[in-house]
Image (cartoon, rainbow, N blue to C red):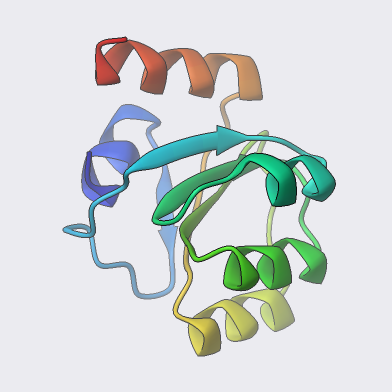
Length: 110
């Protein structure tokens, strides 16, 4: 699945420059960065409502290619700048975690 497809499915909005053709291999939904550190795989999309710098640091460390802020959360300018420096794409959606995960799960055909 591409970031562009995720944007379409979640009615999401890109934050800054986003390469919509980048492939996502796995998807993780969590507000607990300790769970992300334990379970995420490379080239992943992270769905989270945690809008702080630790989210971007975790994404960089775990090779997460895109973070989708859910529940209408807005990243700060500092987060946006840090993500751009790290090569992490940011998008946002008003959906709740449960709904966003369900939509993406259904699309992947599991």
